[in-house]
Image (cartoon, rainbow, N blue to C red; front, side, top):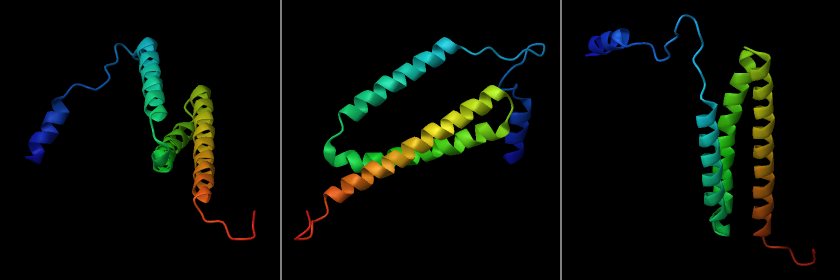
Length: 121
């Protein structure tokens, strides 16, 4: 069974066909459309979250940002071109800012639920 799968993979055409050494064309309009769609979807989802779910949602967002940090470190670490290195460094900075601010906000919200000791303002 495994040998059948490996022969099937060997016979499959390459995932990205390169015609005479040319790099594949990038459809920037489609990428911009997906980015705008994801932005509006994210805004609608976040806007409708109740206050009780804010802390668990922030924790989930921090976990997703941690995955983005790993990917952006890998992108910046390859150092293929100057552009990818700069974009990777910017992505590391943005993701780390999101993670740190998320932890600070979550900590502040959790402190609101602690009982205050008598005599302290």
